[in-house]
Length: 150
Image 1 (cartoon, rainbow, N blue to C red):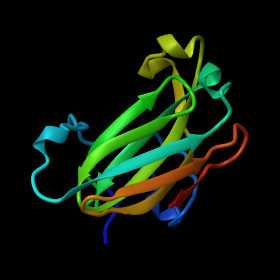
Image 2: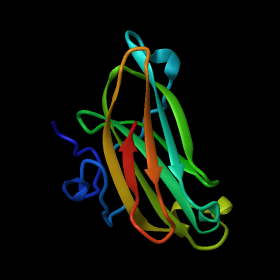
Image 3: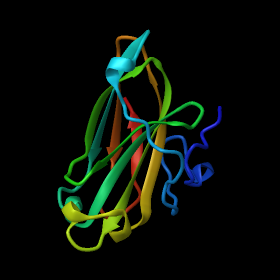
Image 4: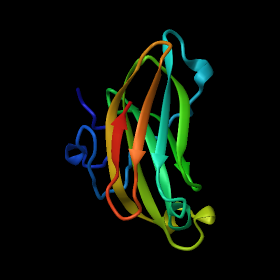
């Protein structure tokens, strides 16, 4: 299986956790439209356990990629904790999260006022038909994050 759709050095990202240093780049993120899902579908729930003060100093990003490494959806969270619940076609995915530090007020941050991606981790998850796939992210403010699929 190939997971190379983003420019994070994913070879350094372990199956359950890892870190990297480059900002994710790549093709435009498609708009996620649950009504466009045809065929078997389930739900992906991602919850990030992180200090609420993170929102004062960094923005959290969550990306879901298909098994070819293409972005399925991506969200930025200027508030903490970050939580995502999305219907997806039944398939295997990779969930990736990272933070970017803010200079100034995070609520008004733009790409040019954000630092490089840090505290990156990812995990593979299977979304089964009619089921909820859960991913728990442990993201302390001063260390790499880790993911667990439940």
